Image 1 (cartoon, rainbow, N blue to C red):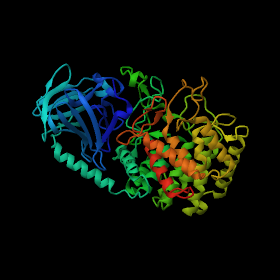
Image 2: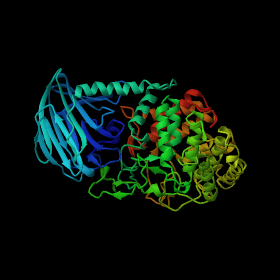
Image 3: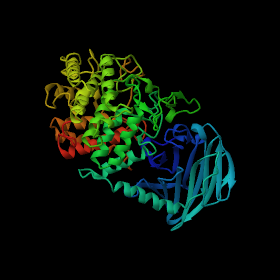
Image 4: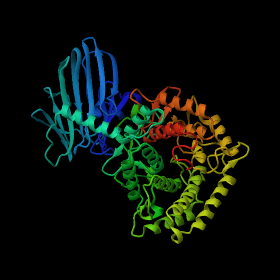
Length: 606
């Protein structure tokens, strides 16, 4: 059985991510990309679905773990009756092949150790052919190949590779596992100790570029390192999470594949990267965004593969029992084909952020490709003018009927508003119908205020005609839809806190009723990103002490190595959802900057 979500740490090389459980088992690794098939899938099943265990072969008295300063080099220290030993886990970017290194270091006494390697390609379903070679093995199935190197003798036993050895004080034993195309020759093993020095240097050099100088600097940097880990360096994309199908409710069906890149993350990612000094990463992410949305404005998707793929067909893996029995296990994401009008606002808001950060200085840098760059923005706005009154599937990717979601309409307003600002800033002149966009912006604004406001509840509501609130409404003051001190904003914040705040964390929307809007069985955890939105909203309206207390509450929810998942169950006091979650860490970075810089936030009046 997999560990609790908070029991996992990550190692990464900016192409793929592995999850390491505090007991010494690597239970999840997708290669050669973060969204490829997993060769270790015990996270969603058991050891028979693939894992790599390296730990003491006797009762463990205590476990401590940490990342070496400003890196993703993970140390896990085990104390036993015989002594103390550490396992150091890492990858070494920017290696051509993704490769996991594990070094056993004796710290005190002599500790018996065991190693069990179970490789099962294609999400735990394919047993590879194993060939013993000097110093280790090759493991092959189809085009998937792994080269295993061990610093101690290994043998096959019960369809797994095992080793037993002892590690005395000051002794070091190295292991490595490299991914390669099985149609080519396997890579030569690399020295694990030299690789560790290279990995530490690479991560510290990257961390050293951070210019964030606000409060909570260590926490912000750890979140930025996590975002870098979730990036896919060949394209510049940032995946939403490293996993699929970790449940939003243990035992439930809300299990989705988050190993893709969402347009919705665009403006948050750009803000977090820019305010922290990572202009190169911001440029790479923005270039990925431009490529991903190329083509007709009507073909915008809400998410894409990390290389820009559009077909993310969703299937269920019936051979995997799911995390703690949470089925189905899904790969791919059917929400990629949904209609979500808010993505137009996300793209234009990201572009406006890029303009403010001087990532965009000319019309040809707008977030689309084509021979006539200055003609793309009008085409985008013309399409939005045709469709903005249509119902959509909303920010939360509901699988129920489409609605007139207020958040979606607000982001349509954002799209027209940012188009006006961009056109004025870049002096597009007669190339765009500026007056028409301004008129449409005002029309949408009036429509939302008329149909999305519930006077009886003294709040904006989830969709036109509804009587329930939604945490996405916290975006209204953030995007400048209304001034923070507008009574309607204050009423909406109060209503959201009254209806959705549970033990200091915020639900996205009510999911307890049988007729919940999303078309799924009721129940899920509290959503961490929306709780960061509440922090920002409270700061904007001047409730600074309350905002800081809530932010500190969120910091306390991180695990022992500073990682956050998508959701949190305040009753069971455990993490839920995919892990680690980029949205949560983006929220941490931006909220820390907002609280440090005052109510206006690091970007002033957005």
